[in-house]
Image (spheres, rainbow, N blue to C red):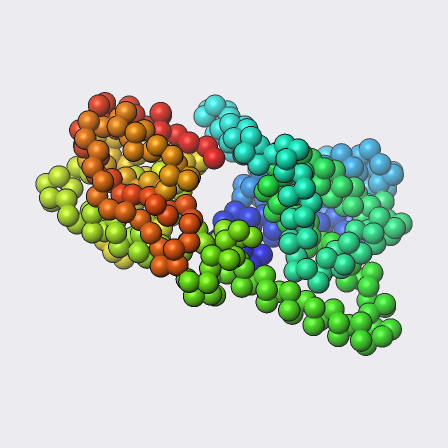
Length: 382
């Protein structure tokens, strides 16, 4: 929650959706009131509008409920109605996907090729220890055991869903260790219930957990939040790239502003800013507004779908990552523009070798074809 909340990406809302879905499922299991399936379906549908992982979570939960002992107690027409509500809420997205070549599958293939496979399974397993602060690992493990041994068939479905998704994500998206993050809210809550009597039977146990939680949470904050001076961020970059990737954004925006302002006004009237990486586009679009910069177009992931800005632009100020991230990018640009000029180099105050380190800002003029015609070839899923 510290890392995803800081950058305000879809994971923040996914955590909320998964926690809410699990809460409703727990309530149904405790009370037997199946009217709550309608709410669960709505939460799955809304959660899927933030991130498709909510639909995967809902599907696995549905399968566990229908194929296990819970079917005898909670499977009725309201469960079917909840599933219909979820599908109806997802229809606009499915309609868009169908009209745009099922972009989510192409994106998934790109992510799996980079982050999945046997080589990343160990990364996935170890990464789960970092989903909560380290001291609370014992709490969520206890929560998993509590749900399985609870005697509530529907609660056991939550434990089954965790096991199924753990294996599925380990094989397909191993390096993206946060994919199960939303379910840890439920596991921590279950662990707190299961551990309550044990902790209060001896005050030293509770003090030990509180102290360990405070210390490990503080360490996590130092790693994933920009609380250290730039010169000390490098040692956290190998563990979490969050702070390191945003390091130097004010300088990046300042550099682009200098380049942009240096273009003659009549040329600038028919120019756009283009970022090869979505984080660079984000820096310009969030911090550049106050600096007078126009909205940057981006070619990576869903940024590409918003288009190139002015499809007839004849000058493109291009922000390119360093060679470690995008090798040969200048050569790539020369396929599309007759003139490509290096206008500035990129760095950051802490000399952290992040995406922008060693990158450049280019002024590209005279496109070999209109920018709108070139745009389909610039799309990059990564």
